[in-house]
Length: 114
Image (cartoon, rainbow, N blue to C red; front, top):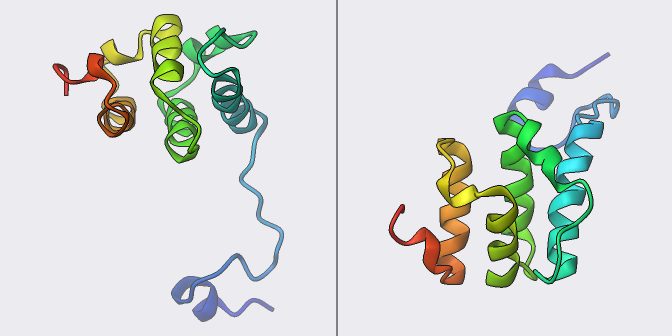
């Protein structure tokens, strides 16, 4: 029996404890972002070009991971931009996260497009 009032109107996880929205693609996006950060901008992680095949939602997960990672810096952003040309993207969801991060970190290439 599920208490739908609590599930819908209260804060917390699902009352069954069985919902899991993690997918292999989401984990790949998170791992790629964390790999870029751990390399500190010195090099690119293997398989980075998979980013170009992702739908917008996966790209947003990648960028949200960068945004929430306190070790993300301008060297990491420069490496990602060099590899993936994110500053020139037309995807508004990606731009919103990328430009926000760039402004926060004082990453000069995002100033004009922002």
